[in-house]
Amino acid sequence: MGDDLGDEWWQHEDACESEEETEQEKQPTEKTKTETKPEKRKRITEKTVKAKKKKSEQTECVTAQKKETEDEKSTKPKKKRKKKKTITEVLATSEPKPGSPADLQNLVTQYFSDKRSVIEQEELKLQDSCFLSSNDLTHSLSSYLKQVCPKWAKIQKQHTGKSSVVLLIVCSSALRTIELIKQLTTFKGEAKAVKLFAKHIKIEEQVKLLQKGVTHIGVGTPGRISALIEKEGLNLQALKYVVLDWNWRDQKLRRMVDIPEIKLDFMKLLENGILNGCKDDKVKIGLF
Image (tube, rainbow, N blue to C red):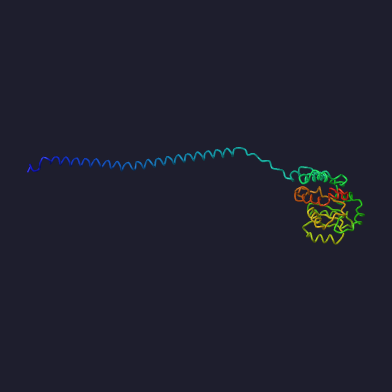
């Protein structure tokens, strides 16, 4: 029986032992492989956390810098811009001065400086004989007109033309027109005065009214007076005196020529025949 087992029985045992050893060696290698995977994940997560920390630190630095710059700006004294003074502020500090013919002449030359040639500008210059004496801020309208037009009673009787006036008073607004007409009571006598402004009546109706009867005095705004002249509802053939409400100021202390839209209408009115009448020595201008 021993012979049948043969000499190789111990070899089988060695082979079995070697197989067991190889299996045992394989198992730890497999474990190491499985163990390396979570280690890699841990490294990746650590890297991402570090990157996030760096980003957060950078953003904090940027925000801190911004706050510092904002704080510096807030601590720096702001430069105050100088506000431009309005007309009312300038006039409130200045003493009222009576208007003079030179004031009107300067206004005309400044307005037409970029609209007319040099030769035409010279033609617009008015001589001193074209002006009446100016108001020295002591007169009422009636007392001023009595001084300027001493022969008014005779002049008004001689005037018989329709759609025309002898005396034209130019002011800035409808309310001022009504005030001036009330001040005319002691001067006008039997003369008829007409309101010439846009609010109370349409221009077509006013043209018809001027055509019906004789009117001696017209008091109104430059816009409506110019419109009537253009539509031939008012002619300047009988006109002898133009009185400008030059020195009166509104609630904002503005004169008639200080209000841009009224100034434009006023210059248009001067172009529509008044300046030509002055040159022909038919019309005299007074500054009230």
